[in-house]
Length: 179
Image (cartoon, rainbow, N blue to C red; front, side, top):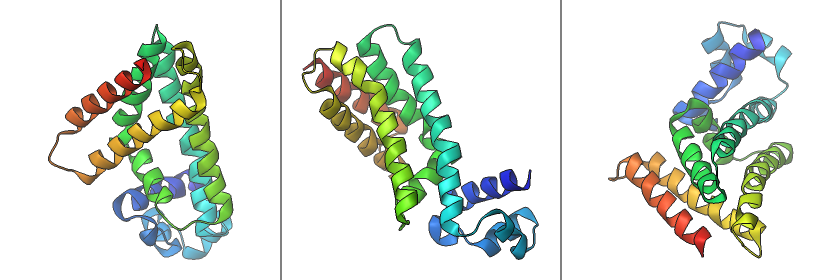
């Protein structure tokens, strides 16, 4: 329970202020634990980040995968892939993951993030191959680029509504995958 409370506090801190505010004193304050107790669960801030990646990325990927599985055609899978990721932007887990991704991390944490993103991109490769792409892996990376750009635009809180950004990203993605 304490470990879960520490991870929840870490998510909140990351989504509120990025990795700069993710400190052991802040975790202790948020959870009511003594600072020394935090060290019993995690050896470093990087260890907190790595565990968040291990816990949160699979949940996020499972939500995207479930949305894709509910789609009946490869084109509908592409749409579900884009829409579900953009729908997750407001989720606290997502904000924490973005804060983690934007920070200076050790090699282990960076590798976990790369692997998780690679797993997400791998989900769409089969649908792109079914749509006739000769290089579906490259197309998947480019498609994820559209998603990533839309995520950043939504997070910036620019003039457009998140729904308008989502619709534009879906339209671009579908035009692109149709060739």
